[in-house]
Length: 310
Image 1 (cartoon, rainbow, N blue to C red):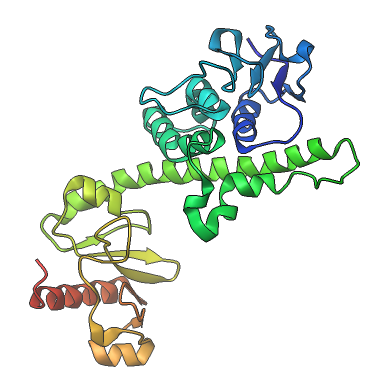
Image 2 (cartoon, helix red, strand yellow; image 1 turned 60 degrees about the vertical axis):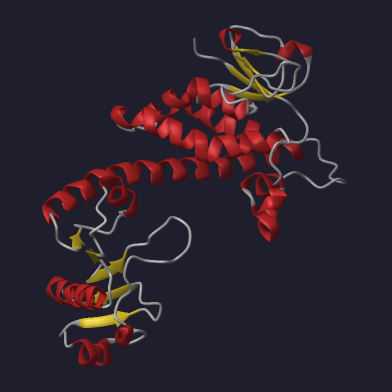
């Protein structure tokens, strides 16, 4: 059944129904969004999907609310918002409609649910406060979307709907970009895994292009790797590998003598023609050629091993 209407509540809008609308309008682009609390609209019907209003959760009747007594909970007891419910039932179809590989859809559905959907669900239900973000609390996605609500003394009756649709466009861009990034990481994982196999016991991982590499390195248990080399625009990069997702500690730093140097100064110190840059923080360097970048990487490995890095 293809709905003619996507029905959510009128009045002030929030992230959960906006993000639900992102999913549903992609799947049903000809359906009209109706923002109303009128009984004739929030009563289930074959021509509509109702979400964040309606006082029930009934997937068969296409009603996805979470405000009623006995509201739905996840298997671990955490609450759903309308976004979580819509994602549960329509998320895989949404990912398929984006053209993502079928083999990746289940993984992407679960990862997006845990990293993006669940925090929205918790915040909407008051189970998570944006205040935990400290000074950044007002910059969380739900807070930013709500800044598009009309001000209290706005007299235009259409202001709410204009704000909703403006926020919807922004919400859509964030959802699509986040999913595109997650999908790219899965594609990168296969490429990095093959590069690890090709590298064997070497300490330097060469990649065909810059891409997310740490998750695949960790997954492969490639603890012997110290540095990554890859092309970038017109030069080549030499980068370190962080030990953890949080923080900046790396498996091995680039040589201290290179820190902050560029071009001729860096060439003189490291002895590599074509060396062009080393960040003062010693986590990234650059060279004008692949050969120069690989020689720099070998020098960095030798110094790291000499300093006790295993």
